[in-house]
Length: 248
Ligand SMILES: NC(=O)c1ccc[n+]([C@@H]2O[C@H](COP(=O)([O-])OP(=O)(O)OC[C@H]3O[C@@H](n4cnc5c(N)ncnc54)[C@H](O)[C@@H]3O)[C@@H](O)[C@H]2O)c1
Image (cartoon, rainbow, N blue to C red; front, side):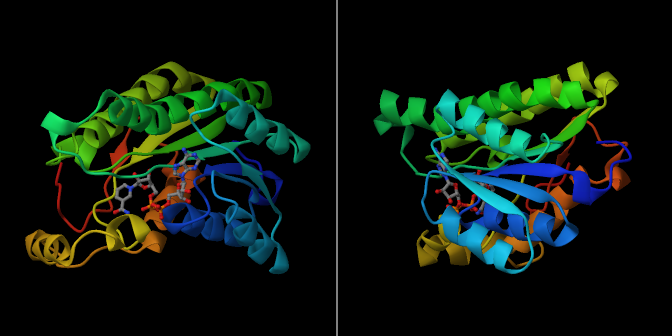
């Protein structure tokens, strides 16, 4: 919220048990945010335990972001801390599937976790932000939502949808002191890419202008910036920590 010290602010981060979400939680905790960390995996409790052992203030909520009850549980926890000022919609997964064998259930699940999940958490958090006079939202897209991906029609469509949702919310809510932006990372060293074949990783490294994959902390820095007052002029933007893979 405008002017409020970070120690008075609560951030909700989804998909915080692993990879980028965990790095975002660590970064925001170090900055002094109180945290509500969501994930479908019980291991988000380990992240909370670790942050709280270092004087952090974090709590875990287990659930599926595609389920509206999860969004409401996240908000209820944030209200116990005094209401959410920041929301990071990060939960996601990636499964490749050639388009001709992509099933309706694979398509629906991909859209449900990424796009419906982002919608549900925004829909639950925004009334609270309005009541508190403002807030900030960062939605995790992907550069594949900008450039497309082979055997990733469902993932790319979901991430492109998140970019469109971000711009529309930014248009609608900026005048109400709610800033909404997206981050579209390139390949980042997390379980999501470490599970890909060595051949894919080697080819991808060759293609990248910087010749390196990012680390989760690189994305966390971008998110922390977008949440901060230093980013007050950023609305509806999609920032790309992507090693130069996409240049807009
Ligand atoms: N790693 C990359 O190269 C990369 C690049 C671009 C975008 N992204 C995006 O970044 C985000 C984080 O990915 P990551 O690389 O850290 O992956 P990750 O697998 O390390 O972490 C994803 C987390 O989201 C959780 N999650 C997945 N589905 C969920 C659901 N339905 N409900 C609640 N939690 C759920 C997982 O349990 C996991 O803890 C994703 O949205 C992903 O699409 C990743």
